[in-house]
Length: 98
Image (cartoon, rainbow, N blue to C red):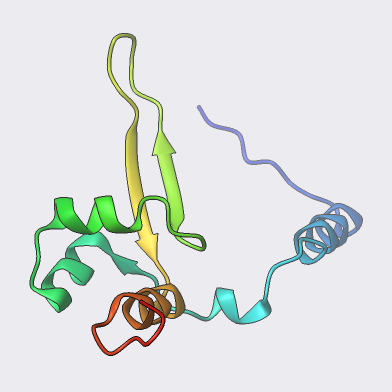
């Protein structure tokens, strides 16, 4: 049977202060992250191509789940709209910096 942990108000306040002390733009909590599948459909390319394109892009949320022995870890990507916009600007044909 699972037990429920109960935090005191002081512990909750301390937890909130720790979370708020992380240097993250507050707007990041309001953004709707896109899945690999959503970006693939938007760009009309395969999900594998999206994974390769965004895997090392700064700002992409990477969620790694550890598998059992002998199995590779599974990586899930979530792409913020700002990262998608910047990526498209950087890689568009109209970009003068290419």
